[in-house]
Length: 246
Image 1 (tube, rainbow, N blue to C red):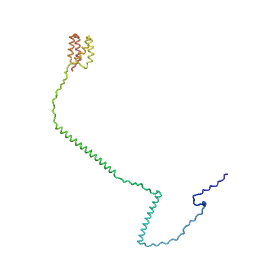
Image 2 (cartoon, rainbow, N blue to C red):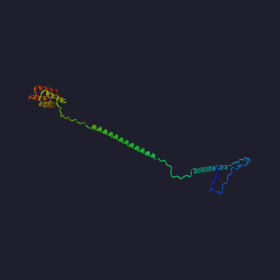
Image 3 (cartoon, helix red, strand yellow):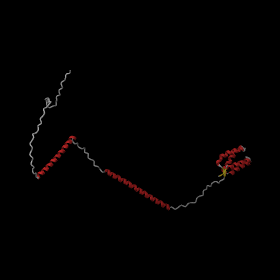
């Protein structure tokens, strides 16, 4: 069995004023008898007195003074409560409420004046341009009326004369002519040494000059004995086949 320890004693209060130990409080204090005041006998009704005018004025003044005193007391009490809750009022930094200035309205008026000036200038320029255009049109009409018509000079005769339309060989059929006449000269047994000259000269004279010049060339070759009469007739027929009027 463990022994019960004694409860620790309370530490001595060094800062207390009384040097003696605290007295023990009684556990069950005796009830205190409430002392009631003795009942007084009923008071006699007071007889109303006549109040004069001076007394009534004094009473009103007193009532007013009491009302003022009460209002002052209420104000003082509210100020004390505010100080207790909010603390002492701090000094202001020195700022003041801004007074709304009418600068923006002035600026708007200035801007509107500038815009109006620009509009007026643009209108003036437009009117000037219209006046200038009207003046130029009037001057152009006057100049057109005043200028006399120029006399047309005689046309100079053109020295160019178109070439006469004659019978010549067709240029577009040159390659066809070369193949056909070269084969024909071989078939007619014309000497090989005269074939190329006949082929080129007939085309040159017939295409650049006339067909009659090409035929004259063939007649001269017949007289020289290069070609016979049968060969001359066949070559003349070929020349007629390639002839056109141009």
